[in-house]
Length: 593
Image (cartoon, rainbow, N blue to C red; front, top):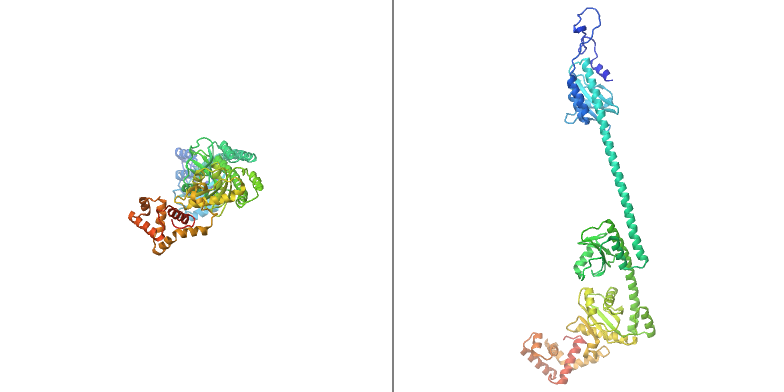
């Protein structure tokens, strides 16, 4: 084929430009008119060393663009040729190459594409004898070489061009084969990498599924065995190897499994703990806070506490996180169940205590209390708890019940509109319940009233009133927060709720009425001065200091009290009745002290 297209470029009649000269043997020309003896063309001189170097260079590179560039650069060495354009087949399309050369004219570009793999003439603007030579190889068409000739080439020059074209096509075939081998090798490497990654993924999935099954089986076994919070945290510790802890809603430690437990456990900062809970609750899954991985225990949206792993070196992996989340779910179910039982128990307790406070059959009371593990046959005390920052609901009632259990005070618990009532076995400690509740609630603003002892259930209603009286007296005292026992009220015991308030008001009116009227008319403070005088035990200096007045002013006021009331403060009877009247007015009737 190349021979034919080379012959096509120089074929012509003898004597025309481009036809080889006829020579006589030995290189002499036969003169015109001589005989028709056969002659032979002169032996052409080929640039063999230079062409051999080009041929080697074509096969020394595997870059297709470089091969085409070498061929185009050396077209002129084989004859009067000029390389006008070169094309390589890229992804099925003919693309001008090599880069850096000017793009061929649109007419040339269109003609080359229309040849569809055949050789053919090409009209190159400003040039003559243009032809597109296809570069074929075993794999098909590799590209085109567009050349022009400034003169008619000889037969030998056509032959050399054909050789250059064939060798260029062969070099391109080798380069294409090499590139395809590289692509195949890269693809094989990629497939092997994908296979390795898939195998590793499958192994990882198998390991992960096995670990998840182990976590599920371990926690399911704990649940089936009736294990509680401690059993769940122990299982999590065995699965992960990290210390495990559970804190309640307020940040107080409930349980710790594993080494490194702080002693004593630090008291939480309420504001910071609430901020931490909100931060963790806004995100899904465990959250790292300093050296801990924390998961919120939140059944049905209500936060009951947190489950945490202690991981100071950040060694936890995805398996650890899965175990923590799964354990938090199991713990949420357990704590929700316990809370439900506590609510049911609290409701039953409340019904029993409500009946005891209102008066009920003793036989029924004994039987029902035994069902709760409470011994009504022992001495009982009625305890009333009121906290300023707490609404008296089920949550606060549960808090009071937990605090009572924590200080060793077995109790039946109920609630009223503004306070919680306990029926407790044995005399409560003077301060333990108050101090525990102050820690639980985070504030000391609470008051507790405790009744006298009760030997039988039918005395509980009266003891309830005594506890209320003790609570009320403590709330109206200068030190309004703390615990007060009815047995310690002294005089206030006879001023209890069993007395008629009208009689108390009459008593106060009899002894303080004129002073009260005078204070109202003149905006004075004689009743308050008298009350402070008695509170200070008749000490002039202390009384004057508490009222922030001068001693002479105090003496003047006491003199006016004698004159207006008609009572003598040096008289024992008058002094006692006046002091009782001021106390009754302040404590029982709610008047200013």
